[in-house]
Length: 279
Image (cartoon, rainbow, N blue to C red):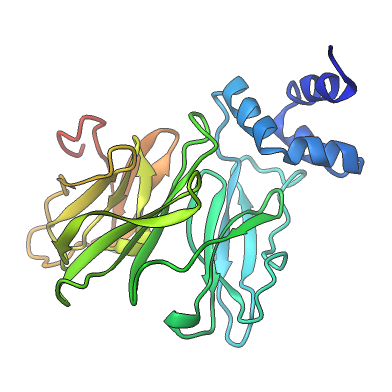
């Protein structure tokens, strides 16, 4: 038997994304339906061509507990821009964004010692968040989210941390939202000089870490396999790449390097989906 909730979900699922977000303010009932993770998952699958409408800029100010967030729209309108605030996470030490992936943010306590740091997974559009158990590590080099809402509502948090083997080795630990726990993944591996562990990009089912030198890595989130991936060649005469952007856009993985005057010359490269190289 179809009830009122089913009818309203069907109506809401046919709305454009901006109208849908605006409807959250109409009444508590609509807000409850739209905030439901199952509804969000069905909406994404029903609208496979949805693109990112904008992004948050994080501004860190001295002595400020929560960062200033500015939502930058990509289509020129701000009607349904999400509220740019993380104050719904009640952390007396403040909150810092560590990583983002397909609408989820990984945040942490800001002004504290590593041992006292608390990690969160949150969704700013619904103001929902989860407190993660403490990672299995003394030192965290980078923490990244692997989440594909077109396939599942589950997500993984991939933490690159210190290893008990030696000080020059790293270990990957994985938090799985299905088990609500951390576990070791794979064996310790040698630290890679210049690898940006905290700036992983989830694309093509894997997390990708670019290196400012010659080595880059990717981690297959499903098979939990760490392998080397091709890096663009370093510019002749340079010992490190001048990376200005590394990210995913509409199903493509891009890298931007700037070697000349910033306002006149920059290189935009794209990684082929078969990992045969960059173009």
